[in-house]
Length: 336
Ligand SMILES: NC(=O)c1ccc[n+]([C@@H]2O[C@H](COP(=O)([O-])OP(=O)(O)OC[C@H]3O[C@@H](n4cnc5c(N)ncnc54)[C@H](O)[C@@H]3O)[C@@H](O)[C@H]2O)c1
Ligand SMILES: O=P(O)(O)OC[C@H](O)CO
Image (cartoon, rainbow, N blue to C red; front, top):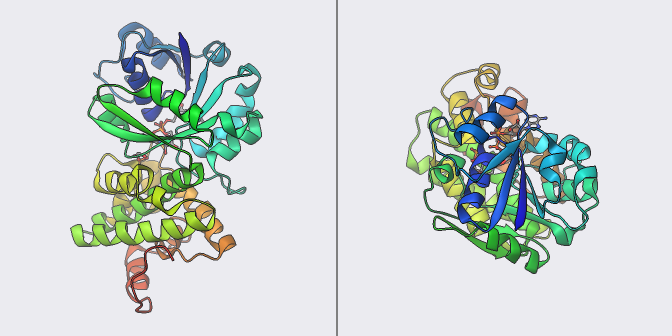
């Protein structure tokens, strides 16, 4: 039987592993760092750190031993924070089999290098691009752990690899589509976290649906500008990994990025918000890499600029709003 190793037992790693176990076409093992989480998954079929009281598939197993998880794995699913992937994968690569497919669940851009997660995975592991895939879309982990219906895209330059991944993920409540535009899918996922921070700030400031919809729509326009200038197909951003994920993340109180922004918008200091956040809000760090990519490509991203200024340069939400609203009047453009 196909073996899937999910490296990371946090929110999305656990929900994704459970979803693949439910799909029934593969044997799934999760690698976790904490023995109490590993023991709870094996003995009580529960991850008390992320989804207390929620029943996981009894066939799902866990181990704290990375080599054991990776042994003879056909798919190696990477579910760690974007900024730690390089370090994690450096430790794991010697145990990854020669024909394994790497699957990134991450939505971020590496600080310093500005690399997408599939690029980091290829560079660190030596696994060729044809065997590196990405899963993205409107996938709030808790809803999927609750077995609510959802869709996603499985992206790989080599379409048959995406189809293989689709086969092991398709279930009664999860409908995966395939695409080959890895650049568009990864940029859609990384930038939507930045836009979700901005929406969260607006929500925290007490603004309603007009402000939210404006940020989502103009956020998509700046995402398309960046992604297309880096080689993505425009249509990918109108799909699940672009518009779909933006709508889900910006509209949901379950989003860690939106929640982070909301706390800042409601008057907490950045330090207080950071101290109150235990899970990964990728947009906070990735916003700097996204802006750097925009500068390199000469693309204008005013919402991203405002987010970077609020997250890293002490601009207050009120100042960011004033700066955004006083921009020069212009015709509406979607993309270029
Ligand atoms: N949670 C979601 O709803 C969701 C959905 C889709 C995509 N994602 C993406 O998946 C990725 C992982 O997110 P998550 O929600 O599982 O995050 P999380 O914070 O819930 O879990 C991160 C996991 O990585 C592990 N880890 C391994 N090495 C680490 C290190 N050096 N530092 C910190 N943690 C380390 C942690 O122990 C934990 O199990 C992110 O890129 C996120 O954008 C998340
Ligand atoms: O909780 P967030 O903000 O990381 O968003 C989760 C997923 O990416 C939604 O698709």
